[in-house]
Amino acid sequence: MSYSKHTSDVSMQGRSLEIALRMNEPDQTADNPKLAQHEPLEAVQVSMTPLARYEEFLQSKGLRNTSQKKFLLEQVFNRHEHFDADLLIDQLPPKGSPNYVSRPTVYRTLKEFVDAGLLHRFELEGRSMYELNYGYPEHDHLYCTKCRKLIEFTSDEIIRIRDQVARSHRFRVRDHRFIIQGTCDECAKKRTFSRRQDRV
Ligand SMILES: [Zn+2]
Ligand SMILES: [Zn+2]
Image (cartoon, rainbow, N blue to C red; front, side, top):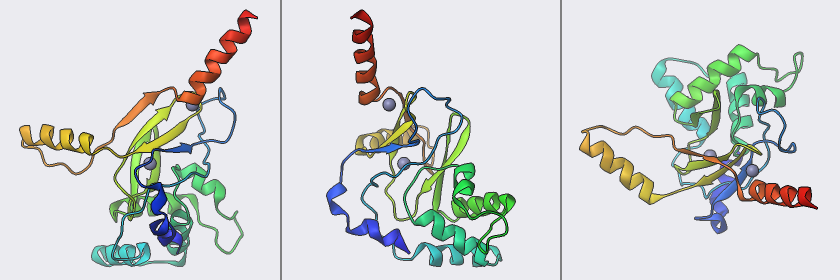
C-alpha cells in the first residue's frame, strides 16, 4: 500500500504545490478535467492503514468488503490526485478483465470511502471531485480557470478565522471548502506574452 510513501517526504512541508488537473494545453473545453501527476503535501501520520480503517467502517455499518472494493481502494491510494468518478473509471481495467468494476459499484464505493473518512469530496465546476483525506493534511485550493490547475495550500490563518466565525454563530465545524478561483502565474504570463506578440 503506497499510502505510506508520502510520510517520508519531509522536504515538501509547507510548500504550495501545483496540481495539474489536465495535461492538455489550456483553452480546451473545461468539461473534462484530466488527472496529472503532482507532488503531494506532506502526509499526516495515521494509526491505521486505509484498508484497516475502511474495514472498521464497513464492520460498523454491517457491510462486507469485496475484492472489487479492495482493488478500488488500492487504485485510489496508490497516488494522491484530484479526480472525479469518470477519470477513475477511465483508469480502471475494461469490462471482461479480472479486476473490472462496474460504474455503479465505483460510485457506491467512492461514497463509502468518503463516509469512512478516507476520501474528501468537493465540488468543482459542477463536478464531484475526490482526493485523499486519510493521512493527508487538511488544505485549501487555488483553481486556475485557464489551465484547470489546482494548487494546494495550508493556512492556519484560514482555520483560525473559520473557527472564530463558527464560534460567534455557536456553529460546530465539520469541515469547509475554500477554493480561490482565478488565473495562475504561468497563464497570466502567457497572456501578457501573446498580447505583446499581437502588437509586433
Ligand atoms: Zn493556469
Ligand atoms: Zn487538494
